[in-house]
Image 1 (cartoon, rainbow, N blue to C red):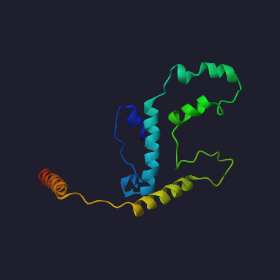
Image 2 (image 1 turned 180 degrees about the horizontal axis):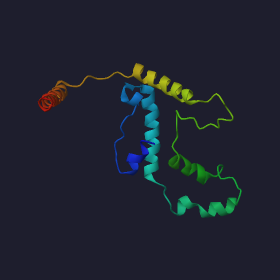
Image 3 (image 1 turned 45 degrees about the vertical axis):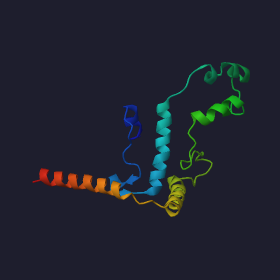
Image 4 (image 1 turned 45 degrees about the horizontal axis):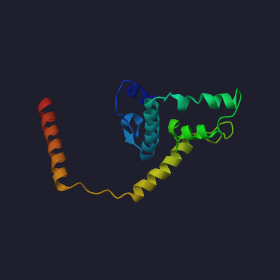
Length: 149
């Protein structure tokens, strides 16, 4: 919910990805779940395309009231574009499986996060970039000390 409001207001930055406990800790698993939520928010912000093709009036007439649209090629063609495919969020009917809880979602994300951390080798920044970052930090520290006297 905290991602939708700024997006609807025109913001293009989401704060807090992966943060827990009011920002006191960070979770790579939570980051993956938050990225999935961000994809859903982005899809929401894209809106719904309404035109002759997407309205499918002829299909609605041929299938009829009470008909089944999921088996139609048109539905499958547009479903992938209109619906966010999720990996961590569980869309199962909870009545069908009472054991499905948020922890299952986090366990899936944790497995993937550990895999990424294990397999990804970070390349060190080049010396020039390191110097630029160091300069920015030193300037900020200097300004902070000046403003807190």
